[in-house]
Every structure is written in C-alpha cells, then in structure tokens.
View 1: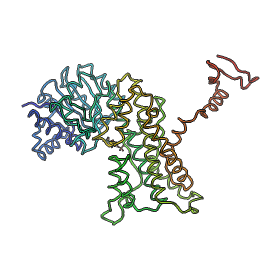
View 2: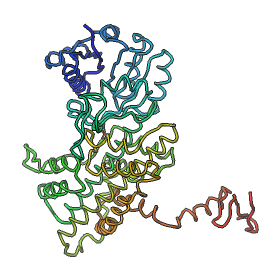
View 3: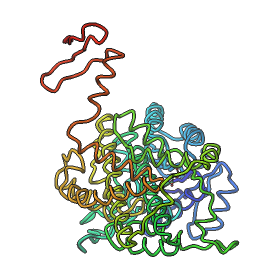
Length: 497
Ligand code: 6PG
C-alpha cells in the first residue's frame, strides 16, 4: 500500500496538516498519507490517536520513500534551521530525481534558495511553502504561499489546493466548476507566488505585517485603557463593534476574546496577569532586515519588532521606572465617544500604512529576485486561513486588479481616500498619546511614514549636505543633472564630478 504524500514531523502543526491531507485525499481518491518523525513513537502515537486518518507510519526516511508513490512528495513540518537541513539531508539520500521535497516551515527565504540549489544537484525539486493559520489553520484550511518551479507547482497543486482555506465568495457566484482543480472563481487561499524562495519570502512579509497589526491593536487597547479608563471587558465590546466594520479581521476578533477572558486563579482580567514581555521567533525581524537590504522603509513593522524587544528588556525597563511624564497629572476631561472613534480611525489608518510597507517590500523582493509575484493574488490568498485575514484585503486585491502595474497602494483611489479620511484621527491620537506619555510606536511611525511620503521636500536634503561636508559623498541638485561636491574645507566652491 502506497501513500500519495508524506508528512515529516508530527508535532501539532505537522500532525494537523497530515490529518487535513488525509481527510481530503480519502474523500477524493481514497489515497493515503504517510507520516514520519525522528521520534517514531510520536508518529505512532499520532496515528493511534487519529485512526480515522488511516496514516501509514514510516519507520525511517528510506521506509517513507518506499511507501510513497512517485514522483514522491514529502512535506517537512519541522523547526526552521538545523532540523530542516537534517530532514532534507535524510530525504536526499532516499529520494530520486523528479521527487519533490516541500518545506512547510517558517524558513528564511534565502535559506530556501540555497537549499533549493543544493537539492537540485540531485535532480530532486525543493519547494518552500509558507503556511499560515496556526494549528487550527493546518487542520481546517491554512493559507499557503508556494515557491519553487512551475512544474513542481503543477504536481503539488492537486494535493495542496483542496486542503487550503477557502475565502467567502464575494458575489455568490463562486461555486466549484467541477469539484476540483480549476474553479469558476478561485477561492482557495493558495497560490504559486514565484520561483525558489518566493513562498517563504511572502510568508515572511505576512508575518511582518502580522507583527505590525498586533502592535497597532495593542496600542489601541493601551489608549482606550489609559486615556478612558475602560476595563478590558469594555474594550472587548469596543473591539467587537469595530469588528463589524472596515476593521473586521481575525486579529480584532481574537483580541476581543482575549480581553474578555478572566484568569481562573485570580479572578483578574487575563490581560492583567500576563507578563508584559512579548516573545518573537524572528520572522518579523527578518522582514525588517530584508527591508533594510532592499532599501524599503518598513518603519511600522520595525517599530512592532522593537516594541517586543523593548518589552523584554527587563533591565532597561526597570531603569526607566523612575522617569516620569510631566503632563499626565493634568489631563483635561475627555470625550469618550470621540476618543474611541479617533482610535478606531487611527488604527485603520495605521494598518493601511503597515500593509503599504509590506506590499512595497514584496514588490521590491520580486524585482530583486526576478519573481513574477502578483500582489493582488497575495492579498487574495491572505483573505482566509491566515493570521492577518481581514475584510480589507479585498480592497488590496481590487486595487491590483484595477491596475496590475500599480506603483504603490498609496496610488489607489480607495487607499488615498481612506488615508485622507483617517489622517486627522491618526494625528490627534498620536499627539494625545505623546502629551500623556502613552507609548504608541507603531501608530507614531505610521504617521511619520505617511508624512514622509507626503512631504514635497524631505529633510534628507540637509543630510546630503552633511554627508558631503564630512565625507565628500557628493550630492545631486534640483536644477540640473549630475553629481556634485562642495569644497567645504576650501573656498566652498562647487565641483562637478
Ligand atoms: C502564522 C503565524 C505563525 C506564527 C509565527 C510568528 O502565519 O501562522 O505567523 O507563523 O505566529 O511563528 O510567531 P512569533 O510571534 O513567535 O514570531
């Protein structure tokens, strides 16, 4: 008995993805899924716990290869880094040319590119697939961002497409055309987003946006709490209300759930007993570092990453407890409804600007690495299954459908109108937070980013003068082409280079 696909790594993500595959394959063709784990007992445990999945449990990589029908497909669901390298090495020993190794973990896209080159030497295909949606998504339908070659995608598509999340149809006219494969209107949240490392690159940006989105929401919470004195339960109600409008998203929805939760041990709001230092596995930082390498400003994402670092910098924070904000004692009465509406608009405006940054980075990455990533398609596959799923992603898809060559989301009329409508609230909110000492780095950076783009004359002009003064770095001029240097230590005349 052979299996159609193998899953390596039977932790929660791996076993849930394997169960999702088993359910779909059994329904469609009766094909089975093989699972393998270096901890063979764990794989047997998963199989015993889920008899309905009818898993074939492999005892070694060679046994897995024997149990897979060709061309073989194995999906790695192991930790990024060394565990991924060693699982790839194991498979390369036992797979044959034409077989496909899929890395479904959160690997750094440049690692995926390097691994792809190495694996290709043996004639085996290597495909990095970004998988989002956490444990529930893996089981019920994740969003998947597929890299690798077109030929590998053709082989993987019938296996992965049926287990992907499906977005709600927009127009009620999107039923499957033939039950599988091509759809009348593509709703599955999976796409081939480009060659080699593109899948993991796009997933990295997804996570960078996720960091920004979460930080912006946390700042909105902090503002409602400190400026209005609302309780977590009251703020949960505000978020539920917001979730009925343009902010509708999974992250807003779960935020309300978290805020409504009471700690069983103390009877306190859960959010008050959770240690306020946030962890990070690195994908947000990768987004920022890659943005720096590509020359793409992703300031709001960077502030979200920095806010997590600051939250965990206990020595730094304890040294700051004696510092005070002078104006907090003199707060004037506040208009509750106005503050709530301002914060809502500031959050939506900041969120748009974080997405603008993320999509700018995807476009720059695609250009740098020669990927044919369709930006509207990326927004489409984030519409369901993934952590940043949100109603407003439809607007991004529409923007790129209306103009596939759109230079930036900022050039789209919907986003221009939204930013114009929300900017005053963002300004008022950031100003109020600054006066009262509420840390809102993501909102503040979103505003600075917006004003940086808007401004007709950047302060960088002076920076160019400084650079030329101390380092003869040269500068351009507004009135003519060329490269120039002023003889700062001499007679200050200008030379043309
Ligand atoms: C997803 C998530 C998932 C996870 C990351 C980020 O898309 O399913 O982004 O990949 O949440 O591991 O985790 P950190 O917040 O720990 O970096």
